[in-house]
Amino acid sequence: MRVKMERETLMKGIARTLGVVDRRGTMPILGNFLFQAEADGVQIAATDLEVSFRGFYPALVEEPGALTLPAHYCFNLIKELPGQLLDLVGTEKSNLQLTVSDSRYQLLGLPADQFPPVPQATDLDLVAVESAQLREMIEKTIFSVSGDDLQYHLSGIFWERVREGAEEEGGIEEGAEEGAGEEKIEEAEEGEKGPYSLRMVSTDGHRLTLIQRLLPESERFAIEEGILIPRKGVAEISRLLAEEEKVALGLGQKSLALKVNNKYLFIRLLEKKFPDYRRIIPETFAYQFALNRRGLFDTLRRISLLSTERFKGVILKLTSDLAEITFQNPEIGEGRELLPLTLEKGEPEGLQFEIGFNARYLLEPLNVMTGETVLMEVNEKDRPCRIIDKEDPNYFSIIMPMSL
Image 1: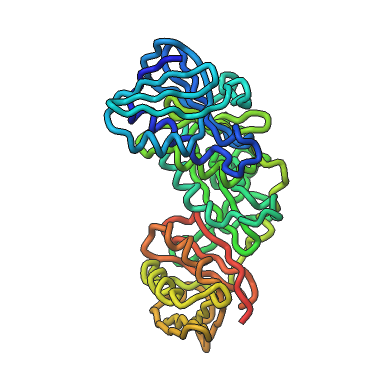
Image 2: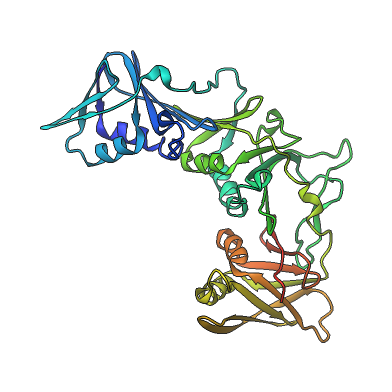
């Protein structure tokens, strides 16, 4: 194998593999990427057997061939090399001789025929999706995916195709009309169905996050029963996306494929059943409070600076016009701040509502919301609370309170 390739091009290709390769060392070749020189360019691929990447990059191929190389070592070296044009020569022992300017290195590789097969997307019906929209949906749900290895069925984001403005069994309160907060996304009767939307849901057992967006051409993306994408897979999707690009999604029997220009990502679906999230979402709330999102976020961020692993709960005392937010940590100190609010729903007479939360569970959704005002909807101090962007009723977070 003999190839001439721009350093920046090769570096970008290898960078795409860094989040995919397996660094646990159970199978050494899974820490390598496949470098395959073909007549029309170079193919770079990586897999951990659950997430796979394949990209095609321009290069001058003088002699075709293939080998595998350790991804992180190779990337770190190429990033620091001088010059622009790399001379790459493969040896019979699957090593790579790399020359640029006056620098010469040899990297030890493994044979390409030991590398696991990477899926192909040739037989998939790909559906065009706005990359900015897809990235937003992942960003607004990935933080509530469970990180507990024992909660395998919660270790990903659930994707589901639904009818926009439809009526689903059990009903989901999906946001607020001006001053009301009673709009529902439900599955409509036959003949009343609107366009399809893509819904993403994640939960770790302590909170649940849901976002829904209109998905053009989604009638071709048949996932009514839903699919569960592992956390690593959605994180790699997010890294691959760029806002100015169109992307395409395709669904195989047990995998999801993503195409961005000349790059492909393949993700094996989780086979565990995602819980019935609709049962977790209260149908009604007794009280609805409107607060300035930025003010609430900044207050919680400041007050949580005193938190530790043992002490991380904040207490909100809510009246008809004021929120008192307090925090006590016997190891560090305590804090108290006041925020104005508006009671949008509920009986104001003598209202003194007190509820506690893990501050992080409030901060994470508030951080990715964009509206000026958020609605906090509650029933009782030991029942789930909903945080919703008043300007975006199709995005909300359900949070279980802490014991006071």
